[in-house]
Image (cartoon, rainbow, N blue to C red; front, side, top):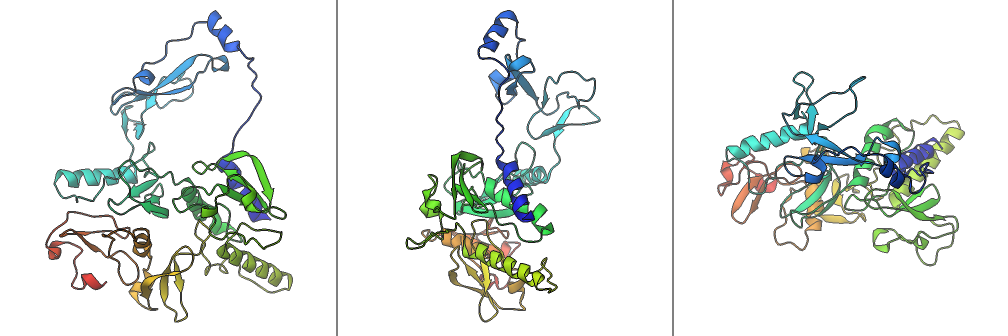
Length: 414
């Protein structure tokens, strides 16, 4: 019950929509502006170019009747840290900037993403960046953007710290955008909440691109959400004890990897084999506790790892004890394998194997190691380059593969 209550709290904080009864009468602002003179707003909001930007916000006047613009200061401009007695804020440092406590000027935030940008800029100025190497993108807080792309391959979700997350799609161009809201929320639940809980949290359901599945369920009740923000959409809900998930207007069959068969009877489920494995183990542990057995429930789920779309992890162990790469339906991906007690077994991630399945129609897929990881040396159209564990180019390319820093004697057969 505690886990269910926690899940409900997570969903509410993620999708909260505040509704209230307005105290201002209709037409109040019209009369207010007739009887009062609104202060002239800062011109930054009406300009919004490279040198003058601002945010349009509700004004501090009664009922927010007057327009209000909060200017965003550029790097090097004077700023205030604020505090008691400092008066009304007339502006703040722009995106990616903060007010330096000593100089009282806007300076660039010191973040991991900004450091990565500085490293790229320095190497680019020296001419040692690769053709397929991209400058890291940071958000307004200086954190990594929601996703990153490998040109000619795929784009995938990433955390604020730049770690690769669930959610990957084919690269379609520089105007591509992946919000990855569900993937990031799932990551935060696993990182900050799940380790201290009795049982794993199985709640947020994502789609393969890191967005929210339009159908979300809490216990036996399912409802519709916005796929980008996760906010509740409409008032339609169903109870799985009597209704099918497909009766919801937002239900999409192509997103239901394990749909209900037509000949089944209620009660129904909107679940997956992986989630069912967790539920069955929970019931087994609870029964064992009632029978008086001493069960260490904190380590009992280490063998089960569900992906944000409800499927099993991308790696499984076969009858011989070897690790193999599998897709979202548990089907083996080609012959990628790693035998026990080998380095390939311990560092296996199947990232390259997953990417190649997405690029099955491409004539230039990445080359993978025997365990499904990205081969450190990738070659394309006569040029070879070094890549990291996520397949991103690092450094310049070369026609001479032996000149690459990642070259080894057995580079073709890692």
